[in-house]
Image 1 (tube, one colour):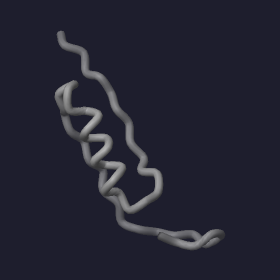
Image 2 (spheres, helix red, strand yellow):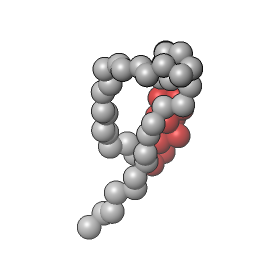
Image 3 (cartoon, rainbow, N blue to C red):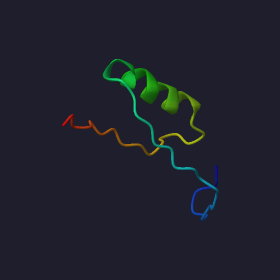
Length: 50
């Protein structure tokens, strides 16, 4: 997408999901392999169990 030195605007989506510990690596790898950018923006947060 885009060209060096040229501002690019595209529609984006924010996706949030809850994933079991055993699946998180597979989910992140699927995101990286299917994302159109070289480096997708993502964060992984562990949820506390109260």
